[in-house]
Amino acid sequence: MIPFLPDHTDALIAFVHNIYGDSFTPLHRPVFEGNERNYLIDTIDSNFVSSVGARVSELEERIAEFTGSARAIATVNGTAALHIALIVAGVCQGDEVLSQAVTFVATCNAICYANARPVFVDVDEDTMGMSPVALRRWLEANTRHEGGKTINRETGARITACVPMHTFGLPCRIAEIAEVCAEFDIALIEDAAESLGSRVGARHTGTFGTLATLSFNGNKVITTGGGGMIVTDDTALADRAKHLTTTAKVPHAWEFVHDQVGYNYRMPNLNAALGCAQMEKLPEMLRIKADTAARYRAFCAEHGLHFIDPIAATTTNYWLNAIRLEDRNARDAFLDYTNGKGVMTRPIWTLMSDLNAFAECQNDGLETSRWLADRVVNLPSSVPENQFHRLHT
Image (cartoon, rainbow, N blue to C red; front, side, top):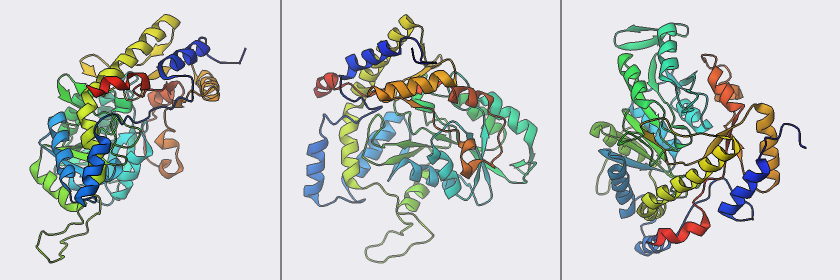
């Protein structure tokens, strides 16, 4: 008997192998079962392989339509998308940006790229995303409002933006967060990197704020290899974001005039070709991932494990399925044992407040964040290979 190892761990490993096969099982692998190869060859044949090409615009149109956003701007990765979103939302040097400690480091890195500083508020237990109650409580206790600006009373810094994250694809209470941000005159930028295909009612995540960002990294629901997207309903912000991501070059037949410091962040056409093919299969991939999650849910119910589901009136893309264990000892024993058996499992990221780069940032105690970090584990969540044939319809 291994100390602290949760009951039914061997049964869960066998269950995972039944879904994914007996070889090493990664956490989330990409699926290339559509027109990826054809579109890549077409793009190479066109000679337009860099950031000028028809597939980039096509992917932007597909993402805008799928999410219900007015505009989408393609970038080289999700971090670049968030960096530009912060800039066009008005985040300046010395400002502060409210976010959550339960997130991937890219969220906080982008805030620092904008020369701002993160402040961490706690998350809700059931969504693992920013808590609107914790957000309001921190703002009421720590800020003053003057001249249309929210000022941190301790640091004197302006709080310009709020960046909640839809953790593992589970929608947070984003409508309530949007209300708090509007009340305090803070721009809402959704980190929807993990939530393509997740919705609150009929409304896609990423459509509640001023702007939102998506990621198409190799481990996401769909991938462009590396890539990201800014989505917004604000045409002026979209135009500025596109201008900044294309080195702030003023259009001209031959002159090279750049009217401000810009960024070489435009997605290459090769990556967009992959993304266009992936978008064709996205609805079916989401259905298969929901089926896989249903199998996990049934197994967990039968064996007394806590499977983490979306809250009422929301749907998730089930990017990464997750369970909640008894405590830190059970978590660590489970992680060690499953990875040793060839089943990749992962904990929540190290809390941002525990990283040296952000250890001095203000936070509200993060009680729920720490409780979750001690208990939550992600399970393999790819589209199973034996179901790839369904994607050929």
